[in-house]
Amino acid sequence: MKPIPSRRDSLVVALLVALSGAPTSAAAQAADALPLAPSADRLIVRLHDGVAAPAAAASVRAAMLRAGGAPRTRAAARPAQRLRQLGNGAELLRLPTPLDAVALERLAAEVAADPRVRYAVPDYLRQPQQAAPTRPDDALYPVQWNLHDPVGGANVPAAWAQANGDGVVVAVVDTGMLFGHPDFDAARVLPGQDFVSDAYNSRRPDPGRAPVGQDQGDWRAEVGECFPGSSTQESTWHGTHVAGTIAEATGNGIGAAGIAPAATLLPVRVLGRCGGYDSDIIDGMTWASGGQVEGVPANQHPADVINMSLGGPGECTLALQEGIDAAVARGTLVVVAAGNQATDARRIAPAACANAVTVAATGVTGMIADYSNYGPRVDLAAPGGGGQVDGPARGWIWQASHTGKTSPASGSFLYKPQVGTSMAAPHVAAVAALVQSARVAAGRLPLSPARLAWLLRATARPFPVAPASRRTIGAGIVDAGRAVQLATDPACDAAVTDCALPIPELANRVALSGQSGDAAGRQYRFMAEAGRRLSIITHGGTGNAQLYVRYGAEASAATHDLRSARQGNSETVRVVAPKAGTYHITLTGDPGFAGVTIQAMQ
Image (tube, rainbow, N blue to C red; front, side, top):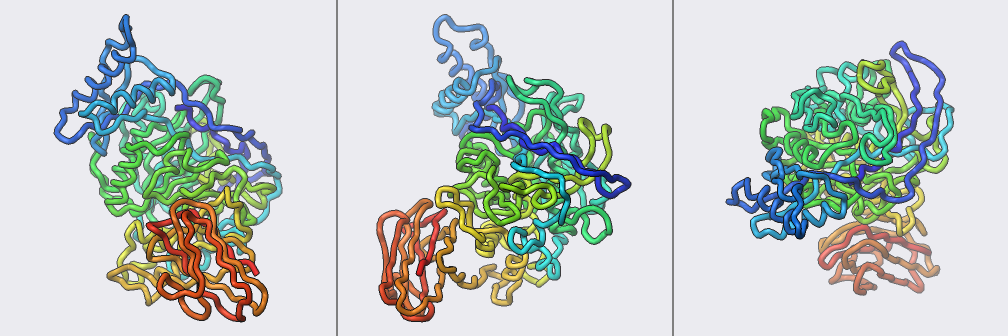
């Protein structure tokens, strides 16, 4: 599969740490459509329990022989090479010759038809999820609006009085990290692990894994180096920038601030030159969350949160989904970037995968960034920068980086702005770390991944202007202050870890998108004026919702004044002559609903 082209800005600005200078900028051209996949030669094959590992290669060879027809080609007659077993139990195989995307997927389907095989999927390459700003300028204004701006920011200072991430491990599954940057507390950065197993991708002299998650650089020196037509690029130092948003040192008098500065960072390198294979990403997730991976020592510091600011075209494969499910089952929250193709996130993996928190990007105005992916799979949004007219001074995300164009030795440490859902996702991962550390400090149990994901959505701040119904981006903008406040509320039971959520008030004519729920229902309220007709509507998303409305008291299926229960999510309740006061609204699912927009209009 062709990796998503990197859309990072080429701006490099040296600040502090003995570096200074005026910023320059350049805007990269956005891709108009999803790219096609390049030739590839790797399959992930999971056998049914009890079937011996050699059956995987045998099934692939048989499928290639069938596909080759008569006469059979010498390439088809050669066996697939077994590379290793993944942490989820699947086998990684290399084909004797590369196939184009269509042929590779057909071969995978043919192998999957073997009754001994649970699934077979291509081992796709994924890319860092970065985007280029649309209208950059070179004016430098408040560098970290994303933390504190009342409209577009994540309301981080409101959380710092109660939490700083202490005791929480956040894995950055990415390009690795640059060790030694002066704006990271070295005591809070673990050595990590390098899972880029192919020597060409890893830029290490030998294939296999390495014991430290050091970023080796992901530059591309030649056109076509990764696949036909691939462009050149300088090293992105992507993982370091992402890690900076999560836990860059704060209050030390230099550089930028991190959201959860006392959290412990676990760098897990899965992306190198040309990106990273799903097989390495799966193993990186497995190891980071405390699972066992063949040939790699056990992780002594399993992550509470995993951030994956990476992706590539295609639906979520069974192998990726299995890796995420297993990580969550071990107690790790998985946060992923929605992607930067301005398309439905269900077309990008791992954003399309269930059981992960998928994050879209907003700009400084709190509106969806023009590059951000969207749709019902998105859980919530966070500052990613680079929206419509944002420039580096007013709307990009500033964090730690490096001047080097190639290897770590080719430059020195600095700070620079980047934009993309890659920058949005670590805001959510870091707020999750604040929540867990705040609960422990308050003498409560940490939240399970499912409850933590619920709390992040439930406390998200409504968008200042609702996204269009066809471009929904979840429940709102992540809000650190609200999340920590609810997580530490005395009403939250330490054993049940279930919190009473304040009932949100609908603003007149302001749509609230990204709503999800089940038969238990979601509640809202609206302050009505007397006499003017009131309309309450829902639309969009997936599932089947029912709408119940009652004046002055909680509405339910059993007790309501009015209701709408059409098939699907398009519901309308009209109050012709409303009273002045509070109308209570309940949205329930049969069996559930997701990505729904609700709006009250008077």
